[in-house]
Structure formats: C-alpha cells, structure tokens
Image: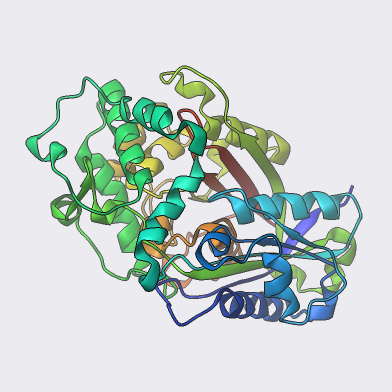
Length: 413
C-alpha cells in the first residue's frame, strides 16, 4: 500500500467569464497543473473530472469529462465523471487516491471546471441550485429547514423580500438562526468570519473579490436573508482547478521537495438525526474519519479551508473540524484566531465567499490553496511553518444538513 502525493496544482482566476467555455477553463487549469508538476500529458494514466452545471445550462450530459479532456489530447486513458454537488472534485480526489492506492495507476489527474454565469439564461442559473436536494420532497424539505431557527427574536428587516437569490442562502440563514438560538451566536460574529475572509482574498491574486471589508461594512451590506448580507454569501463563479497525484513508487519522477502527502480523505453522506444533535453532524463525522485515517488530531492542523458558501457555514464547520468546542465557532471568529497570524488560520484563500465558488471546481481549488501553503509558496498570506492542513467541502442538502461532505488531510514531507 503505497503513499499518495500531490505533485502538481493549477487553477484559473475566479470570476464571471461569459466568453470562456468549460473546455477553455479546463485547459487552463490542467496545463497549469501539468506545468507545476513538470509533467507531460502522456504521464497521466487516469483522470477524474467534475462539473455540475453544464448538463442543465448547455445540454452537455453524461460525458463532460471526455469532452473537456479529450479536446486537450487525453485519449485511451480512463476518464471518470464525478458529480457530487459542491464536493465533486474533492470526491474525485478521494476516488483517484483509492485508485492509485490500489495500484491501478501511478499518476492521475483530478480536474474540476465550472461555468455558473450565463447572463442570457439568468432564470435558469438560479433554478439550477434546486437540483442540490431531493426535488420530490422540495416543499417538505424547505419548510423543515426554514423552521429550524423558529423561536429566535428577529429584527424587522428579517421579514423583508430581498429579491433574487439562491434558495441555499435561505437555508443557510435558517441554520444560522438555529445556531444563534442554541448557542448565542451573533450576527456580528458571523460578520467577523466574513470580514476575515475578505481580507485574506486581497492577498490572493486569483480571488474573485479583492475588496477588504470591515465587520461593520459586512453588516451594513445589502440583506440577502437575515442574518446574512451580500458579503457573507458566495458569488456565482466561473473557474477551474486541477491536481496531479502520484504514488510513492513514481515520486522520483517529480520534484520531491514540493510534493505534499495525502494523509487522509473521507467521503460521508448525511444521516437522519435530530436537528439539535450537532455531534453527529455530517461535517463532524467526515472530520473524525479523515483524522483517524491520517493519524492526526485537530490540534495538529496548522491551516484549513472550510466550505463557507455562507459565512455562517464557517462558524459551524470550524466546530465540526474540532478547532473549538461546540457553540464557540462565533467566538473563535471574533477573537481573530482564524485570521492570518492567529492560532488556526481558516480560509487563507479568501474562502468561497470571497475567493469564489465554482461548484464543480471548489474542492480542487481548496486543495490548491493548502498545497500552496504547505510548500511555503503562499506569499503574503503564508502561514509560517505550516506542516499539516485540512479541507472540509460539503455539497447539496438532504434532510437537515449537507447531502455529502469530504474532509481531506494533507501533510508536508
């Protein structure tokens, strides 16, 4: 059973690029990863490709990976399409890890590429989000989720119609209100998580947003769904990310000094539980399994990327990852301990809400940031001495939580 390493990373800038195709974005990210690894296209023996929107938005179904990668010149190798909501490409990493671990190949590619911004199909852009839960129980699911925060005293503006938005922002808002009701979390603490990530993104030249926000500016931004304002929510993003993985047996073909070891990777689906049973949250279950596989403890983690499609999500996910006690995620954000220079820097890339969230590519892009950190190549956003990193990447909703979550633990060799 050989060890598995990441030897190449690549990503595109994130933003809204109506003139770029999925193929173009894929080409840019994959060529960047190959160049980073000093590898050739012919070195890749198998590939995993993730995309969640092209089928609905363009009618390109079932063979998206073959279309995107064969146009680059990949032929004959296994190409596997992985669609698992927002954690698609981190699921691809998990599957590539297992394939390499089984000895079925020596070098593999994981790519995620997404176009979410189609200005001529605006209504369809927002309808696409509703595929992230069970469409047969949509009304029941929405009512159950939106009721989670009932009993919390709300300000008058909470009842106002804030206009067009993803249904998931209403869900995140309800989950935030539940956390506020149970643990006393405040809107200001959620805003502190967002402000921190916006600051981090100003140090990331590939981030979609490059504007620093104070906590007060985050709170004063346009309301999306109380307690969430616009700068607490991830934007629509186009972009791609790619990773080159290899086995220990083939590591000599690459630059060992820049290789990062995959210590653990766990994919978990949700379960039926009481809404107040936070200890069995899907994020906690995935983290525990990944830590056990990696042989590390939360206190060993030096830097993390968590799935902050809304700023509230960071609050609950740092708890799930074990970086603080349950109910203390808001206080952790407000303390500054998750900011660069703090005890456990979180979302040094800017996170989904400021760096961007191209759904099918998001997991690979989280790994791109952590590999950069572990190599010591993050420049002004570098976490000094980082040796262990962890990523949490959730996707979709089923019942009262994400439908799937992947936690990945990486180590510097």
